[in-house]
Picture (cartoon, rainbow, N blue to C red):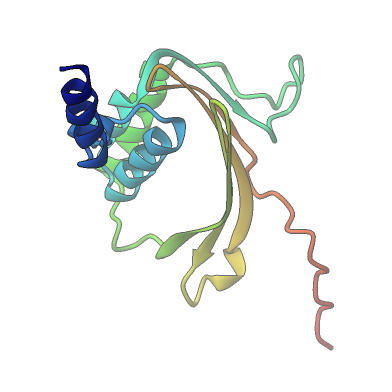
Amino acid sequence: MRCFALLAGGLLIVSGAPAAAQGPTDTLPAQVVERMLEAFDRGDQAARGRLYDSVYYFQDLMVPPSGDPKRPKAMSAEARARQWQGYIAESRFDTLPQRSRKVLQRMVVGRFVVYHIAVVFKPPHEEDSFEKLEVYEVKNGKIVAEYDGQHTASGRPAAKAGP
């Protein structure tokens, strides 16, 4: 009898029981961030918003330090989502420069997901293309913090201006 139980258990493991499969509700940090970025690309603010914790921290790494008059006012996650939704609703996407996002590198360290991306504008706006660093912290399947590098230097030498 013991042998039969061990054999049955072994067959379940070898057959690939669905308990080990991962689906669209994965809470792995990399999967959560990928779903958020896909929703961002689609302009689906509702789906994107569901992936953020109700209280999350956002920091633009290029923002002036506290006390600097150029520092923007702090805003809640809900206010930021409303601002983005308003921007999307009011924008005419046919008049905005077309761009795409290309992941240059991705690193996952525990609950942190780090992206080095290129934002590439199509002609005639290609000179506006840039690279940036984004860091996301995910806990319990929700994004709890986001650090945005905004226009991070690529480290490549800049070409000299022509005559």
